[in-house]
Image (cartoon, rainbow, N blue to C red; front, side, top):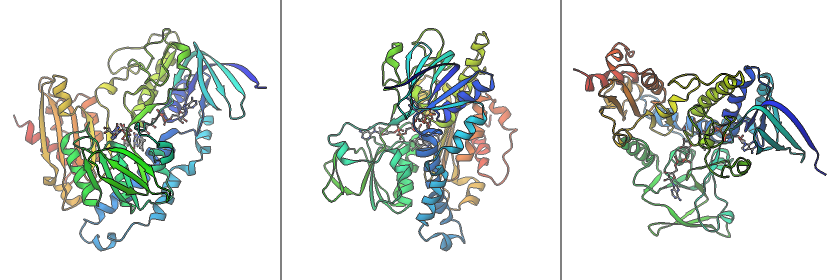
Length: 479
Ligand SMILES: Cc1cc2nc3c(=O)[nH]c(=O)nc-3n(C[C@H](O)[C@H](O)[C@H](O)COP(=O)(O)OP(=O)(O)OC[C@H]3O[C@@H](n4cnc5c(N)ncnc54)[C@H](O)[C@@H]3O)c2cc1C
Ligand SMILES: NC(=O)c1ccc[n+]([C@@H]2O[C@H](COP(=O)([O-])OP(=O)(O)OC[C@H]3O[C@@H](n4cnc5c(N)ncnc54)[C@H](O)[C@@H]3O)[C@@H](O)[C@H]2O)c1
């Protein structure tokens, strides 16, 4: 017989990924008793099957690509990577898929971790089925936050179960390097994982449905990433997707592509987007549709549910599928929950601590490929589509002294968009080796709404790659 317990607390958070943990941290710090519910590993996708292990695989590959081009390092860097050491490093960065450290942090923050699968059962109520089959019914005095993240979306191909394809989970946790790997999908996961596994010794074929990789980025970034992948030996096929795939009796993968070619490989990775993990969280009990992205306003309150008690932050709301942006939303949701618990109305002004203004103005993202792509704010295409009057300023990063110090054969390009009326930067993209660390300056310029006239006074050190900022100003704002 199933045992049932009924308990009351102030706040229930479903999902202890990076986002749920940050919501709970904020509400607990505000003095609200907080229970966080986790069905797998505390730390979420990011810690075990996404950001941390993928960047651990990529860092040696990217450094290797740079080092081979630095004079004097060539011979030392030309040999293959020590794959065993890279995989062992990746394992450590994924904490050996053990969440003890996270559980300790949760306890130290004064949050209660309840292991099990959480489902809404009505207004401010969550039922948790524990691993032992017990059901704990939680009643929240103030709020429930759904932070259940996202999962890999798989294409509608027959026989997928028998194919046993890789998703992002296997691509970030595999213990062996497949000799041949087909990657389907030219988005961020596709290009990063193609870079990593090619660098670790696989022969990768990348199938991208669109006419360019990274279709939401500036086209020059797509072109540079495609060039970099091809130079690394990846067989990049644009405008191509898999129409059928199966595993042979010998364990090989066969795939037929949209142009009729047949591919043979050892593994196939579907990097074809994400779906919200909302199919089995009891959405139907509050008149929402299971499997949908949870629509929220800028205070992270679910708009379709009355009463201002249900929140959704991170991947599950579909606003910006990045750990850092989800954690930003979490900080805001936590503050809103605390304010409402005190009986105060949230401050709805732009840039207030209760409004996720940056979600619609400046979402930064880095694609860790060779070369890297770092972008924030609008692309030229998005500005045009939104009817924004912007000046587009481009600069060849190969002309920047600091870039040539970084790597004498440096190839890269930078673009900023300047709002003509307000004279502020509203978008920036850098594509080139080592550009990831350039990005935060752009994020500051956009969120701080710094007039370009003032940016002239932000002097980049010589000879750093950041001097590209000066070159962009000289190119676009001489007047
Ligand atoms: C391969 C890959 C690489 C990535 N790299 C980066 C990167 O470098 N930088 C970056 O910013 N972003 C990256 N991302 C995106 C990033 O992983 C996500 O944006 C981030 O994990 C979202 O955090 P979250 O807390 O919303 O969800 P998740 O991390 O998915 O956590 C959700 C948690 O909720 C739990 N859960 C779900 N349903 C229930 C339930 N019913 N009951 C209890 N618990 C439940 C899950 O087990 C999980 O622990 C990457 C994604 C992928 C796939
Ligand atoms: N470095 C980072 O910060 C990082 C790394 C990885 C992922 N992420 C986040 O995770 C999100 C998800 O990444 P993703 O790459 O899975 O999704 P994505 O949406 O970026 O790319 C998926 C790609 O697959 C293609 N596609 C979809 N269905 C297909 C099909 N049937 N056949 C062929 N192609 C198909 C789409 O056209 C798209 O280009 C990203 O948007 C990003 O926010 C971030």
